[in-house]
Amino acid sequence: MTKTFIRPIAMVSAFLLSGMAAQAEGLLMPDFDAELGRGLYASKGCVVCHSVNGIGGIDAPALDYDPSQGPMNPFDFAAKMWRGAETMIYMQQDELGDQIEITGPELAAIIAFAHDAEEQAKFSMDDVPEAIADMLHEADDEHEDEEADGDHDDVPDSEEGHD
Image 1 (cartoon, rainbow, N blue to C red):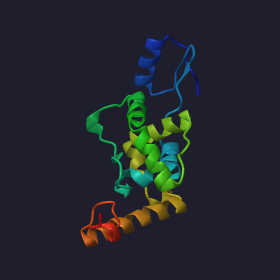
Image 2 (cartoon, one colour):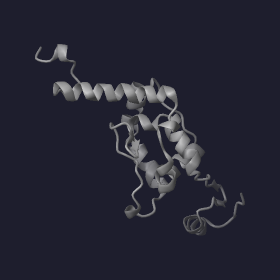
Image 3 (cartoon, one colour):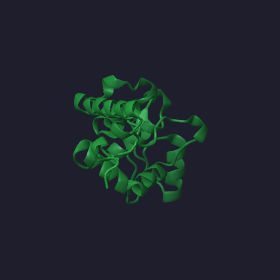
């Protein structure tokens, strides 16, 4: 991959127009590899809370690409994650047992996946590692149990109605 040295304003323009990584003095834009992002989205556990193509959790917003929204600034995507960081960390610890670690290039790949209709169309349960798939099945079972008894709160049935 060729890296281009240009001034910061021109770097942003070139990046947005070309889709290629650009480098300016002191800055390096990572590759936005949607195919890599598809695998990371599943293996890092994003799919436990978020869904794509109806596959995944329902505890956080779906990440299905909507072309009517137009291009997204990847820094805006990261800023939204930052604003929700406290909740995301809590959910990661609760669902996955620990906070996940994501590098800058991995985040760029996940962002690319979240904004690539063709790559999202390829996403299936075959992409989801067995341990993560087991978590999804457990969550499905919990949601089915809640729907069956009409109970949609987080209070165990044995504690309801007791003060």
